[in-house]
Image 1 (cartoon, helix red, strand yellow):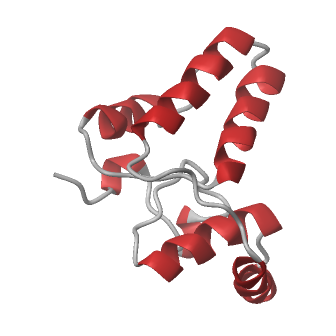
Image 2 (spheres, one colour):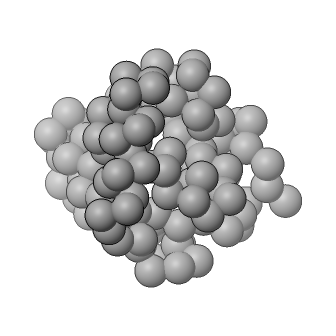
Length: 120
């Protein structure tokens, strides 16, 4: 399977033991990318299970106020509803958003790549 340019940094971030959590949506998105783009269902299963087990909290569920916060971010930054949900959840909880989405999130100052993340 081809590796994302930030694969090693993401792996290092996850192995460092920094606390993180995910939106329930994240698990679906990761499964979709790995299974559809790379065609590897086994890797998709392992990665989703690892994210689920590694999360310090149960996956966060979307609620109507998160969607409403996301709509504001969509209008201001031209994000997808999915990306806006990640940004809104991070802002709501005072968390740093770590993402490999350089084009839509990192370049707009809404997230950092794993190699730029603040963690112990």
